[in-house]
Length: 396
Image 1 (cartoon, rainbow, N blue to C red):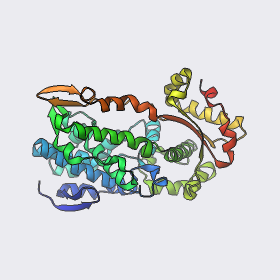
Image 2 (cartoon, helix red, strand yellow):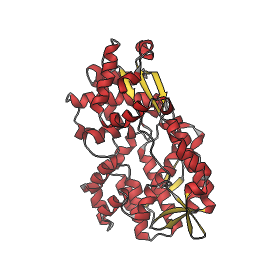
Image 3 (tube, rainbow, N blue to C red):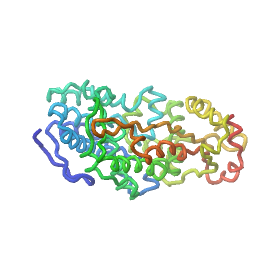
Image 4 (tube, one colour):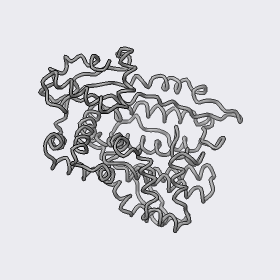
């Protein structure tokens, strides 16, 4: 593949792009990613967290190319994987993962499903077909249907994760995400139509997974970001329900569009937008870890997460009981960690689960729920009243 352009990336240095890759990057659909922050609301905590899905996608393409070269994958398959890495996030809504719940709830589609729809649209599919690439093959890789090619894009040690951990650490200034990319790439291998790591790469995999574990509470689940997310979600839900915002237009918006919409809106929605402008966020009034919850509440959490109407009714009931306006008491129930590290290590042609090979990774699997907290947020003036609320009584 002959490079047509070189982009200087802050993480990887020179990134070589083919002519078709450059043309795809220059489409309006891809340029939109310049205006979508990689870490959503995290810029309110870490001032440097203004990097975007645009540079992350180019970084993922670069790492995909490096890994394909190391694995000696054919030129045709390498082209497929590079395009898949470049396009894997093109379906993200405004503020990245912050809006993902809304897309699934109101459109019934994940960002991966929206991604495949955009790839099949005229602009991008036309450019791929000129290159004799079937857009459906790119979609299959992104959806996990192409064996080891898909694992390069999405797995326990995929190029997506490699790039975002290093990039997020760089831009937030949090050192936990620093990993040895060279060692990791050079010790991955194809095994049973999937990706595996050799014994020489075990420490690099441990470092990658430990970095993800440490970055989660420090960056990805930072309480200030969670507060801003909760405020944003409640405001957008109200806007959609009251007909102020069309959910079919919402996923096409970028961060600038959505902030402009919030800023100009009336009522509660506009108030939340103006609070973001002033960084006047709600405060944490209540927090409980998983281990502090009663067994009855633990059982109710998964059901409540699936029933957003009941979730909102509980918030409003708590607000009414305290004489607070609806929308100013927000209950935050993160997804319960169920992620299990299922990667394998290969030694002397024998396969071992990564947990067998590494006690550290086994501990990480077991410790995930320690990072989970349920919380209630409210405006500063209502903080003292909400602090005394018996939240669990509303959940049992």
